Length: 314
Image 1 (spheres, helix red, strand yellow):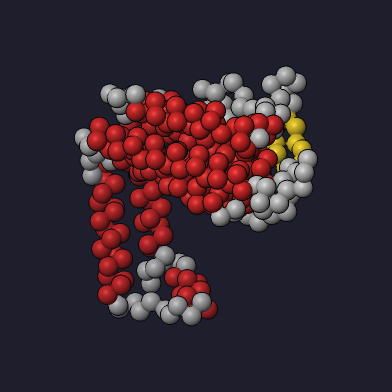
Image 2 (cartoon, one colour):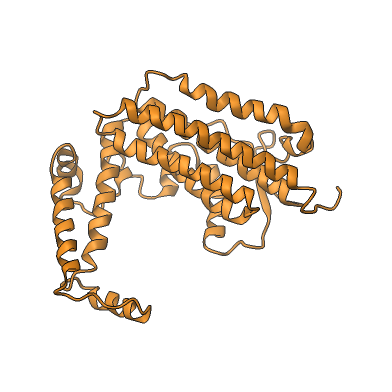
């Protein structure tokens, strides 16, 4: 292989930046359809918020690709996996209950965070010291900010106790505030690891999810490995990446799969009457690869260099 230079990988950067842009553009179209068909569906809030996150991640990946920020792309890949898992879990069964539980979880976390600002909270003094050490300035217990925080807490507490959230809140969370939202129908699911196993993503969790987590936590900034699952041997294989094209190809293929699966789940969850909206997503990405693969080097698109997904998805 010729030595990789900034000039030699420029076609790759352009190719994948355009590919991420296709995901972003088609994702926006799908999101608009989802919003239009879910105005009267309570579960639509969580589904639309999660799918909007996927669209925003596509835009983020496009920007990072354009600026050669390959390591940061891995952090967004982990987020794409988590978001896809949540949407697939909604789709699996009990869509309305699970999506509302997700909303309640988010509101509860917001309430817990806001309470740390209040003078009667156990961690208030520690928090104040932290603000002072950062030279942000302490919160005055008698200031208008505290009153605003108390008002917001009251509003959120009323929100989760009122319909359409109230029934699910009382059923699962009122007497069990530490319950994870994805545990309401399955007590055996208490973590992302458990959720991955339940949905048939256990292999991906133990390989790619953990690998991407290392980049988020700063443990893997110099290590450049691709994790590959061989459908022939059934083994997990790890090998070094010789340069940015391999790394970018790997990260794009992973993200593209997460994006497409999340799109399918969101459409299925809301029973979208116009499923053809997905056609543009699949046809444009496929055409982009067919048109450009000769220009960027077909050898990088072989199965030996791209993560092979297992077939036991649920």
